[in-house]
Image (cartoon, rainbow, N blue to C red):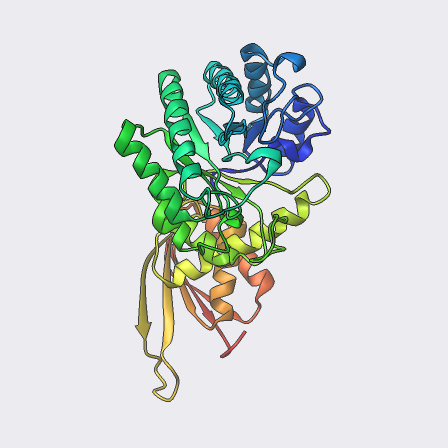
Length: 390
């Protein structure tokens, strides 16, 4: 992925500098910056964060964001996650709004484009849908986001909504309608989506989420959930079809950040391995489906059936891969997957130097010895499996 990261609160026991270094060392290049660190704290989940008590200012926010950037970590969003529902208490509601606006000022000064939030709770931290509040809570939220969206627009920033199956907006379709109504009534286009597939899995599958929300997504959260779970799990331990999800991601939103959460220092390597496995299979599947997949080093130009000389044998699929940039490990893995499925691979290496081409082929034959490699031209190679099934 072009933009792969993790929320900074995953390493909440580290300073921002320690967090940035840890992220960079583990292959991340973006983050959601959170006020949950020893030197940058005070965050209250779905409440009003203690900004003054913890010395949070626009200058400090920029300082911490710049530490991330200096370590190669882009700050995709500022994680606010305040209480936006605030039912029945106008004084508290205004305090919540005021705190959110201060965070907008901090983000704008720190050059962070997005501020992220959930929808908030009912009194006594109660969540969920009831017939009594199904419509009224929706209207109250809409009023609040129009107010907040207008304030954000003045500051040139976006508000990203992370909705959830256990809240008043429990599906991708209702979230789209929420955004549409805000746009229709207030003309606001800066209300965006922080899409967390785990938060919709019981109501919206891996296709629905993109079908309804793709134009509004600012970035993704990466965690998992079982369909009947109340709360989430780390990626790979729930019931999301991650291969299907990443196929849609690469087809529709390949440039958007994918940012893990729930993962911590102890599970970072494990989660990275899972993401690598799921994304590799997603790209391989897309190759068969003739999609152009960005940021994987390949442009899949064509797929054609080519009957073998022996009419008794089944037609063999020939896949031509046009290499546009060298990413040796991933390229080799995709070719290996194709060969193991008895596919002949034509490598079009017009835009690669010989060293990169040879490196890819070497990586393939280290893993698969029963393959014939023929050089068709200076810039083209044909790799043929030597047995029916590998």
